[in-house]
Length: 435
Ligand SMILES: [Zn+2]
Image (cartoon, rainbow, N blue to C red; front, side):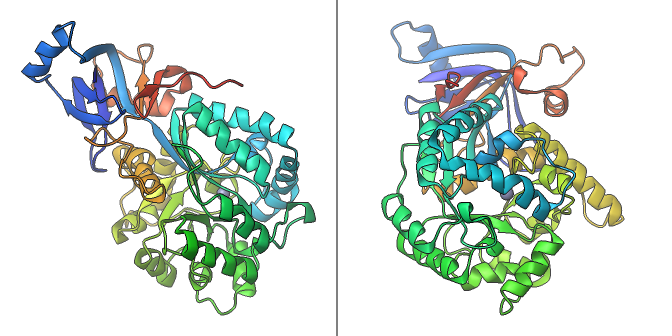
């Protein structure tokens, strides 16, 4: 067992930070958190002083120890397009920039070049868990899974399904999906898990959506997709699926809304019946505020979701989101919620920093745990969770009169990956992945 001493901060509940100044966290040999203390129990004081004991005390000094981040909506093949064409709206951005780039992943060499950089950047930004869209290409998707496993990062990885309204070289078929999941319905390693990934209703014919419903029923796999991101997209879905009462209903009617852990990105316009449907089907919303701002999509009513008991997690949505850091997503989540608050004349409170931090850590970990059928949570230092953590050296930002909460606030708003000294995943210190 190892015991780390540092300033430990996490959010077991969203309402406030839990802070252990010069506290202790014990991690067992399987990488599971045993407990967290303000003072080390006397028995452990003796054991750490005994050189023959198997308990080691590791002092991390005047540094912050926080949970690693969970990016619950990100497109790996769009990594090269980061920062590109963000003065467009969704459908133009997709057709002119995103689809041509994704088509290049038919080449395994190209895929390896980009995916190595993508995985490296997740490591760099301290994102130890993610839910990832790949492309329609099985070989490139397998490669991405392998790179995650080699890096020691946890991921839900989805082969994308799309059989209409895209260039021919980006279409697959219901049959391709059946073939793929026949051999890919189990974890490909200790940390990498499959997730069904219909791109969105406009890309998937009724036949393909029925196949997704069958795959959910046969294999019990989780689902991720996009929902109610943009007004023109919603109008389009209304034309494509006239029998559905709302966009979410189109997924529900094919049996891919809540039968298994379901993650829907955006939900900027989910209200009324759709809101009830998300709640009643236990759907998790992946809120992507950088993306929603860049593509002028809208502001998701996150406070309403939380009030309704709908779980919310955060995602970068790279490359509609322009930055891989979850720090930036936390900031944007708070900023857009403040704009929403101002526009609605303060009817609903905006997100606090501890709430947004919770969404980027423990809430993401909870969805991951359900989707990976794991008994171990992540995203906080509660006993029984895997120890996925970042050691933050904020000495250049830190002045005497700051409390630990002030130091965390400053790190979140003005810090970056250079401040991360050590990254832990499942108890292991992670080396930098090979580029
Ligand atoms: Zn997306």
